[in-house]
Image (cartoon, rainbow, N blue to C red; front, side, top):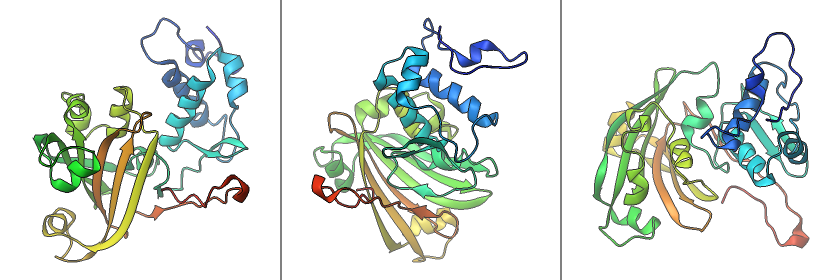
Length: 273
C-alpha cells in the first residue's frame, strides 16, 4: 500500500493509505484521505492540494482515478478546481450553490459546518412521466420512470422544493437506499451506483410559486421564486436525471462563476451551460 503524507504521533497509518483489497473504489479512498487532511487542518482554505502527477506517483494510481477523486471532492465542495493551476481547498464560509458545478444542493450545503440541513421526502416511486420530464430524458411521452419529490430546509427555514425524474433503470438503484429517507445525497448515491455526471445543463428563471410549492415552502400563493431546471448526462451523453427545483433566494444564494476562455480555441465564456 502507498502513503501520501508523513503523519506524526499515534495517528492510524491506515488512514493515509490505499487498501488494495477493499471493495471501496480507489478514488473514494483517496478522496477520504484528502478530506481527513483538510478537516484536520493540514490544508487550510486557499491552500493548494497535491496535483494529479504527485498523487499518481505517491499512491500508484491511474490519472483517471485521481481525476475522479478531484471530481468527488469538488462535488462535496471541499476543493475548487482552477484551470491550469490545480485544486485548492474551499472556504467553508462560502455557502453558495454554484450551478456550473456538477453537484447537488445537499452535497454543497451539507459540508458547511455551521449549517443544519434537513430533507423531507414527500413521495417517490414509479409512475408515468409528465411530458416535459419524458422529453428531457429522451423518453416517449407517458413512459414510466422514477419520481422523487423532496423539500429541503436550512437552519429550520424551508429552502427548496425539488422533484427529480429518472429512467426506470436508474430509479431502481435507489430502492432501499438512505436517499429515499432524506438522509443521503441523490448525486452521491447515483455516482456510487455507476451513474456519474459528465455534463449538465441548468437553466434559471424567476417565476411565481405554484400552489403546491408555496404550501411546502410557507410562501403566499404566487410569491416570486427561482425555478432551476437541470438535465444530467453520463459519459455517453445519455440523460439520466432531470429535476425541477423551486428555490427561495432569501434562504439560498445561487451563484454562477464565469471564466474567460481563449477566443482562439473557439470557446465562449463558461456560465455553466
